[in-house]
Each structure stands twice: as structure tokens, then as C-alpha cells.
Amino acid sequence: MKVLLVEDDRALSDALCEALGEAGLLMERAENGGEADFLVRTEAYDAVILDLGLPDGDGSRWLADWREDGIELPVLVLTARTRWADKAAGFSAGADDYVTKPFETAEVLFRLRALVRRTHGHAHPVLRIGELAFDTHSGSVTLAGRPISLTAQESRLLAYLAHAAPRVVSRSELAEHVYDRDHEPDSNVIDVQVSRLRRKLGAARIETLRGQGYRLVDTDGAP
Ligand code: CA
Image (cartoon, rainbow, N blue to C red; front, top):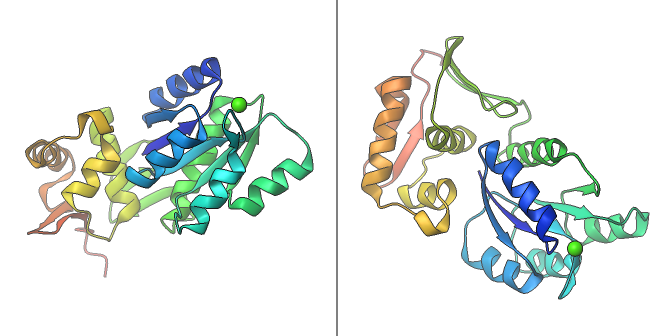
């Protein structure tokens, strides 16, 4: 999951990036609305964490512009303000959820995961593709009830495929969502990592569609 954090408070931004990074999220950041606006329009993110009090204008103004232009990615608003009117402004601009400062970083993480899951049309926190189960809350993976150990990168790759399933995901889409923009790999690297995942999960579980990409499939006989 790749997330853009828009926050001008450097200490808060550092702390949040560290905590969410440790939880396996790929974090990129912007310190003002202009920078965020450029990134949201040019990069692929799974969600945005948006502070409302930014040096170049209220975060809700930037958000309203994105929604106006059809940018649909989930946005979690951060605000130091507890006044109802500010939350209302965030929601009317198109926010999906909010957290009031000060907050527990775990709460931000839990809300982000739920938002991303919902965006992909999943209500249950555990995504199941046949006997393969990916717990979006804990990040744990099991195959027929047995725990499977994955590296952070393998876990991000599987998480993206599991959220998207049964949709086919192209290599370029994977590269954008699973690697940060300074380290986007060539397609060989993705193929190698998919091969490693196949060794752990069973080769047939990740189908390659020539010229299109990959998808997770149910190989366990369910109709
Ligand atoms: Ca601020």
C-alpha cells in the first residue's frame, strides 16, 4: 500500500512515516498543498493522509479541487481542530474519514487499511482467495490455515493482488503501487518477486496473463 502523507509539521510527519513504514506501508510525503497536488496528479497512491492546516492554504481546498477533477483516491484528514465545522468542511470537500490530533498512530493505520479495503469493495478484514487468506488488519497470510512467512516486499505485492482480485493487475500498476517512486523496478524484478511468491503460495495461485499482467486465482476447487 502506497500512501502520500501531506503534513507540514516535520516531527509529526517523521513519527507517522516511521510508524506506518514499520507496519509495511510505503510512505511518500509532501509538506504543502502545492507539492501534494503535483504528486496526487502524477503518481499512483492507494490513499492520502491530509493535514488541514497547510502553509499554502486549507487542506480541504486542495481536496475539493481533486474531487472536482475526478480524483477518487481515499483521503483521511488530519486536523488539530476539534470544531465540528472543520470536520464538516473536510467531509463536504470529499474526505472519507478523519482523525483529530493528537492521535495514536495505530488508529491512523487501522483507518487507512479499512479505507483502502472498502475502496476495493471488501467489507471483511480477511481477503480470501480459495484457501489463501490475507488479513488486511494484521498483514498475516495463511494457506489452508498454515501461516506463510513473507518479506515486506512480498507482502506488499500480495496485498495489492489480493485487494484487486479477481482483477488482472499489470506490471506497471504493480510497480507504481508496490515500490516507491525512486525505486520503481523494471519488469524483470517484478517477475522475480512474483516467482518467489509462487514458491511460497503454489505456482498456480498467481496466474500470468500474457501482455496483461497477473491475477490471484482460486485453485482450490470452489465454483
Ligand atoms: Ca499543519
